[in-house]
Length: 505
Image (tube, rainbow, N blue to C red; front, side, top):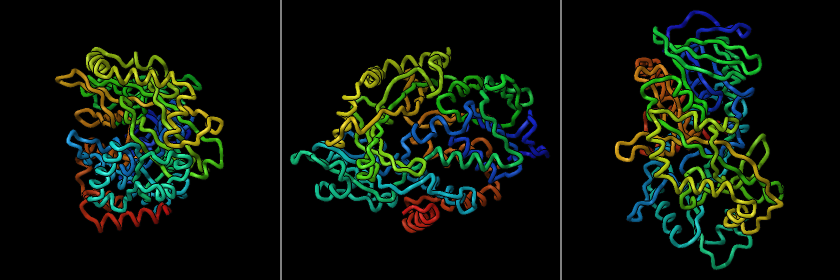
């Protein structure tokens, strides 16, 4: 991938030149750094993090849903068409990508990079639940469409209340006898603590002599040098010391701040991109008896006008080895681009090149803005009312409000509308592939391995074509280049291997 400089990075000495700079110590940078090291162990890397610890923003367990997003239960990945049919194309793509993530994690466990997989991943059934005739018909059609494909074999559907009582007893308590509801269930779903996974990967990388982690280091500027390299200027937030790091390749994986840093690079490809920040809150259960009665991730349908990441779900989590129960998230609006960001983030992101797309997208999404502001103003009682649709017996004294992470949705130029709001993740890279940034949110972390492999292919095409690269990639991810959805035997054997290695039961 690169020619080695022939030196080893000293942990006690600041090096001003490296091959790769990774900005942000979250799951994306951790995944990319691990892939690069496995493919080319001699590459010198520096990871820069503005906070004093890693995985403290979007990757932190309390800041994201923790769902191994595999489209088993997320209804927003299967939109209904005008004729009543369901578009499952995105669901299949996301399910394939999550299987790639599981394979890479299993490889890392087998090679002792990750020692205790149960500290970051657990098997938890993934369910969808809907209420009322219209949504039941949608769920039934979704179930029929998905179960025709290998990735979704084993999904169960039921409207039978005795079956639902067995699946989701907490949700069925004191529910009106006349109320109609339906649910689907996939037992192979997972709960993932992406914060714990990130810390495992970064710890592994930081032990290498040619890789350094620098926390409390904020990137102040990114500048292209005449020789084609990039100069990244950082400030140590504890000492105030500034330094300049030269690198051949820069990856910006700084969550909501990625847009601001991408703009600093000045690459033409960054022009026209804007960001729309969306905050959120959870209701976190504090009653251990209630927590013990629910063992599933149950996703419903988002309210009209709600952003996709606000799909309501009653969610079993495992954080620091302890079972937890969350409901939400409740969306909100803030001009911050990070949970620990600045209220000036949104204004600072507005440039001449993106002001028209941002204004156009803002005008087209006035109902969304109104919805988010309404959510911010909701009182605890209003939040409890939303929970009661899922759990009729819910009492406010059993729950407390927990602040979730901040997400920044992508705004892109559009030839007709001027600008459109995108829900998803997008990689923006320079023409020569020497710098790239990840923008957007869900499904994000769950598809990080596939996204980062595609980034390497885009940014280092010659290396990606080599036989050694391809051989190593297939060693790490046996199904790479194949479709599990098209091969029932391969899908079954791959899942059996990953679930055994990752201790998923």
